[in-house]
Amino acid sequence: MTATAAPTRRSGWLPVGAGHVLRWWESGSPGGVPLLLLHGGPGGHSTRAQRALADPRRFRIIQVDQRGCGASRPRGGLVANTTGHLVDDLERLRTHLGVEQWVVLGPSWGTVLALALAARSPRAVSALVLSGLFLGAREEYRHLLDGQGVDPAVWDRFVAPLDAAERADVPAAYARRIHDPAHPDHARAVRNWVAFDAALGGAGFAPSRIRLGPGLVASAAVEAHYARHGFFLPTEGVLGLAGAVTAPVTVVQGTGDTAGAASAERLRAALAHAHLGWVEAGHSAVEPRLAARIRAALDGAAAAAPGRGATR
Image: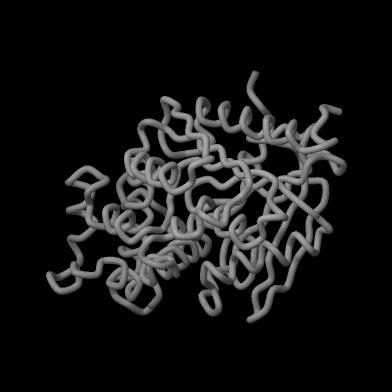
């Protein structure tokens, strides 16, 4: 049976400083196990489709758009927008909503935030479910941004606007173009960035098919900002935090997600208690086979929560 997304039960705004105001939503059961459902990116946004990953009878589903993302304001805001700020924001949200402890689902970029949050506030995280792994390690994202994770034709098209010197630091070259609306190559850079990002996730389409809008430009701006600054993480990404993660960790990884496969093995080596399961799927958490396994992992996390998670 295909899962359906629960309707929004309540929503609100959370000021977090430096002019940023985050948009958040709740759905599912108000008495269920609190579940923080992170979005990907950086630069992504929360969607109703993501809610279908969790049983609304078991979970109090909480979503939030990160700084500069989606419905949060200012759209595309880059000031005081780092990984550390995002983790701080999640703790503020937990306190604001009166949540003592929550399960955290981290797909893709959400993996970084989920692990960082669990390391910072171990008593506040009862379990982690991760998929489409991205750990923010320099080796990992350099592999992606050196064209090794995509078709050579896609890579050639991506770097075509850059001269030889700029190709030494592709994220910085693209950030300059994307962050400057007056740059003569601004629109092309946004389209190229979005198309390349989609290719990394297994989706292929030509940049010329992309219709620019404020939301898309903001998304590219945030992601380029993070990529340019090494995702505001040390060389090893969040792997260095693994020793502080005490919550149960379940990783659901698609066999077709080639970049994530290496990350999954590195995480398992660094986090001995993590359970790694493979699924014949790609990167996106909403792919049917991957979604079914994620849902099962979340149900297991709910059942393990003392006195919580019973189907209502």
